[in-house]
Structure formats: C-alpha cells, structure tokens
Image (cartoon, rainbow, N blue to C red; front, side, top):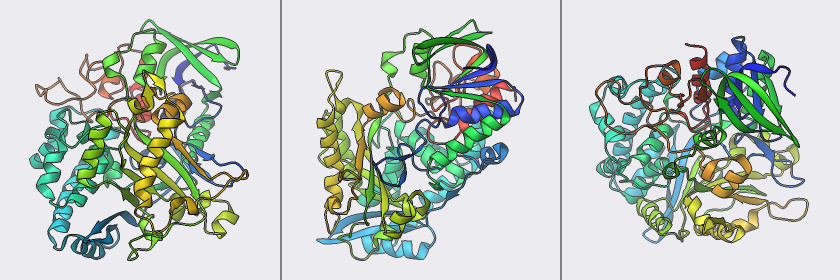
Length: 544
C-alpha cells in the first residue's frame, strides 16, 4: 500500500524511463509513487532466466544500449556499465558462387577496407562508407547532447547541425536517396539501410520519412552511434535505477495496474488495482511511462484509430552449446557473431520482404540481425555453461508487422509465429555449414532453448499497443510551429508543437493536460533504452 494518500508525482509504469523520472524527482525532494502492473520493475529492459533449469540470464526484450547518456548514469550514481563491441558487423553473402562476407572491424580500418575491396573489387565503396559515416558522426556529435536539453525548434537544430547537405539527407529527403547516391553495391546499401528499419515497418523511399527518424536515433547514440552490450544484461540497468529511486525516497509498488487517471489540470487522482482490490491515490502531477494510446484510455479519451501503433519485429532468444560453423570459412564465428550478424539484408532483399509483408504475407526470407551478447559479456552465463563454451544468440527479425499475426483482428497464435520463425531461421541456415538446430542447448525438460516473441506477444506481456517497441512512430528531435519553419513531422497533435511554451512543451513531454506528462518512449525524443524521456519529464516537473 502507498505510505500516503497523495504524492507530488505518481508515475504510471516502472520501466526504465519511469524509474529515471522517479529517481530524479525523489533526489530533488519530491514525494514519488511508482505503480507497475507486472510483478517486477524494468518493463522491457529486464534480464531473465528464459529457459527452464538453465543458468543463463538473457535480455529477453530490449538488448543493446546506445542512447543512454552518461549524464544520467553519473547524476543518478548508477552502478552500471556497458562494453563496446570491437566488431561492428558481419554480413555473409555469396559472390561468384563462393561464400564470402563483409566484416566491419571498428578497431581496424585497414582490415575493414580490405574486406570492402574483397567484396566489391575496388576501394570506392569503402571510401563512400567513410564519407557517409563521417557525416552521420558529425551530426551525432551535435545532436545527441541536445536530447537532454530543452527541445529545440527545427530551425535551431538545423543551425546546430551546421551542415546543409547532412540536414537535407537525414531530415528532409527519403533516406533511400542518400543511400543510393553514396553507394552502388547492393549488399552495402542494405547494411546501411537496416538501421532505418528496426521495429519500423517502412521502406527506403517512404515520403513520411519514418525510416529517416528511425535511422537518426540509431546513428546518434552517445554521440558516436555505437551500440553496446550491458554488463550483466539489461536488467542490471533497471535494477540499478530501481535501487537509486528507492534510495532517494521513491516508493515503488509492483503488481499494481493503473486503471484510470482523472485530472482537472491542477490535481489528479490515479486509480489502480492490486489483486482483487481497487485503490485511489492523489497526485499533483502524473507521469505516464506507458504508450500515449494507453494514456488516452486511462484518461477516458478515445484514441485516434488512424494513429494506432504497430510493431514490426520478431524477437528470438536462443542458447547454444556452441556457435555454428559458417560456410564462409575465412571468418571465425567468434568474430562474425561478435557484432551485428546481418541475414537477408541486402538492399533488394529488404525491399522484397517489405513488399511481401505489405501484401499481407510473411516474407519468404525475412531479414534479421543477430547478436551474441555472451561473447562480450560472459557474466550472463552460469560458470559451468561459460566453461563449456555455451553462447547466447539474440535474433531481431524485420518486416514482420503485427498485422501478419492476426486474422480478422484475432491473434492467430502459434501458426503464424512458427511461419515467421522459419522465415528468419531458413535464411540463416543457408549461411551456415551446419543446421542451427544442431547447436541449440536443451533445457532441463529436454526442449531446445529457443523462444520467439511476436508483436502480439509484446502487447500481451508488456502492454505495448500493437507490440510497438517505440510506443508509436518515432519523432524528429525538434518542435515545429514556433519559428515560421513548418516543414517535416514530429509527433504533432498532442505534444509536438508549441502551445504556449510550458515547461512540458519545452521538454517535449506535454499532453493536453497540464499536470499529466509523458515520460516514456512516446514522448518526443523517446524510443530505445535511453532514460531520456524520463529525464526530460523530471526536468519539466522541476521547472528546469
């Protein structure tokens, strides 16, 4: 039970962003209550012993860290660390009837240049690669620090980027134009484009620029674009955040599902259910870590059906007895799987899979990306498993929107999930010198250690509408309508524009209600494991 009848702030949802907001507000002396529906904190950022009787802690849902600022780690005093991956990516293919691949070694540009030359026969693509990512790197250095500052206008951010060509390429024109202008090799083009499609059902030339927004957040993280492995699994972050919030005085209640929020703009009342009992608690301000569509329902408002979120991914968790051998014998599997292992992600394959899914069919070869966290952080494995050479694999499948997993609006269950699983594992097996199934570990019941999570599974288990991992379409990190520059699209409507310059507007966390703020991924500058919306909502509450 809450320790008081009312709080300065009640936070709906104990995921990582809600915990960040709670820790900041409690440190500032505010009374804070966090209400979490599940029996644990962490939301999608958790470490779980996924397979029965097997001592391996997998980051079951969210799995890599890029956007979390050191500022938040330092200011909250978190005991949390990430490790850099030396290998950026490996993309296997077949050229001239021979298995080969593109290995991008972040620590050795000479080696990477040789890999490009071997794949394409010239230096041109590697030189284009360097130019392109020098451009995105310069944008990252300028844009990333702004994410924990008051939300700039479009014109202000453009001036900060200070590169008209880069602004045009990333913020104005469909990303496919820039990819095709810089690169000629189909495989290289695909490797670049994949960052625009994570959890986002779109294509290279989408005029809405959804692909640009997704790409931007994937290349600006930390000011470098590096995607790092959380030491101890993703749950190490959310456990540290919960500890920091509690230590500062926040009260966190799990197993408490918020069912309604009422507000007159000055004071609010939050209704929640714990077991069979219903409770109410007062709040000066409510911070919502759930999706905007969920918040609308809690407020008794009708969500816009045209803006209904839709996830587009299949998350597959695996534990292997050993890494599989590759058809491309020139690369060690321990290097190939150490970074991002691309499967069926050439430019043409990405487009073909998108078209098949848009037509309502599970792609014949669904693109996917694979990560082996245990190569970078063996601590997620029990000592015995680590000694025996076991490894985890995380596969993230693209172009598998939630609509494919329903029939007439009904969850079709295992049939489509199994079809989608085969659509990602089939192309992977074609790149291996042995079936992946031969490498899978078994749990204590003799079952293969593999599980697949569709968008509908994420909706059911985590409360993500449509299984959208970003809560809704990502936004550009600026606000429109304040300086005569009205091009482009943020979220618009409920919190994207200028409505009088309140603190919540300035931080990109406002809703239509002055004392109800978004602190989750649905805020402007939300998405990914970042803590940024939680930080920004707390700053708005504190008037900073």
